Length: 343
Image (cartoon, rainbow, N blue to C red; front, side, top):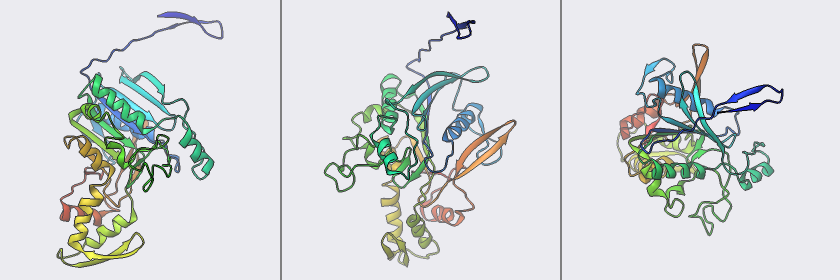
């Protein structure tokens, strides 16, 4: 504790609190992507989910319901905010959340210029700023310093078939498909990629895996609204046998195959090659990993709770009623109460 003098000449007392985390503690990690095209504040989704896990109740379906309380008074909640470029850690205080620290990732804040301008895209690409690699490294460090502590890991952002979109960067041709270094991560790329969990890109995979609790949960919120995936699912719907021929719009034109082969492609290629499935495999299959069903988009919901609001992402069961029915019937896939499925 020390006394300091403010600019107005008034003496104020500053309290410093040193927090040492035990090797055995619980942690929840939340990632807020920058909404580069829509302007949503994805940190609000993180904070709502944090408050749900602490209170043991949620409004994510639009009405209050009880859930498992996964955050206690000693649980560290860590938020990576890709808009500000900062990583913040906090604990629950008597009334508010106590901020333990706030650290800029890299040397620069995220450049927030329009994604429609190539100069802005290039600056974000070249800047030493927040990247998914900062998140991966943080998890790997947990695996060394506090193995088994990570109870939940959630990403709130735009997403596509290749995974979450956190700042809308890109891969140089050298690292993109067909490039000489296509198997490697582009060191300037800030977004998650399907190859992230390969040994060449994650040499600390053992530590990364060790961070998770045995009952750990991972969820990639957002979309997988790839139109051709939805076309395939709808083509399968209504068939009476796997031998029945189906036809649907696909990449590059019209595709014709059998319902059985289409189902196999859905399971063995679309599902298995997704970011969520690759993460699940990297974690050894013991951690539950959820994501949006292929072909489906996510909606946003704000629910008034007293004088505040809670904010949620969800896959609309009415919009995709036909697709959900097919996924249940043909693949045994049952969505959770927010419309996301297990990969």
